[in-house]
Length: 449
Image (cartoon, rainbow, N blue to C red; front, side, top):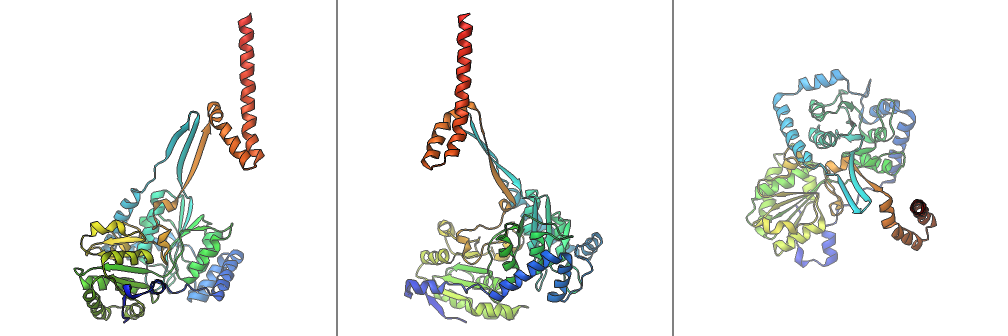
């Protein structure tokens, strides 16, 4: 394993290097391949989806949509204990996201000028659920519950089929909990293309959500840059966790948190930052012990080999390191945490205390596990209800309103050299002046009679 990095001994440039992430693949071949897949789907429709499933996954599909009988069979095949676990997670996720409902605003900024902020669900949303080496019902819940609470009119879900040409029962059951009726056995870049542009079977959506491999990520980027494509939730990179721990932290707990992230993939990022050298050494020992018991130990081992152990002179310096890195997951196991918590600025999701593992947020605490990676936590938020809702404004001006702010509008338009803007106000004010003059003249005639 790597040596301990002594933060105070590094220059500024060395500190930046110590926190640098591996460069995301800028693979011209990947870009070309994904573009080719997208074009195939746009041109050959469902036929392309079936052919690509055969080519890339070795799966022969007779149909793309998951039928009602397949849904019933999937639910029936799932054991009650797993159903209960999904039910509990769903309940907590639903409650937390229901509490995020935004409030409309209606305000009179001037007499006769009323401004409103309104919210409406994005109608058609596409949820991508990776297949990989294991089913991910938790991701179904994270995306599907948001769409359900927001009231999205047409949520659809795509996930790659297994070797038998079906979806895992856990995936199907979680989707039904979220009210998703349109489920498709399609994965990879072709699934993103199908949702972005539509096929004979899969409807076009307005926005695509969900994680995926490099092909999925590249496809999301490409369709989001096409005016005829679809918006996406956020940029993506390898999963990551940073743990800040002091002398009182439990080394076994800390090691388990690092490994829980490391088992995601060989490119997962794991960092421990501490003001106590003995704690770091104890965590390294625990990693060796726990690693051997993992079913995915080869994957986790490669990720841990690329991990970093950073020693700082005090907790304040640990916080500086965390803020500079801006981790996807931040775990804090320190004393007087309430004193320090507000000092942590950049993180996708924060887990506070010895009994708050990252696994809780991944599955059942209620928060969303779709989070910004690769430092995007500085300027992107964790996925939430508002990502499934569009906001828009309404303004209503009456005669008094346009008269109250009309002169200011014309002056500003004049300053910007936009004559038509100025005239759109002037023509109305002139009309009101004429009406006032006419009314005054009528009044004078009436008084003279």
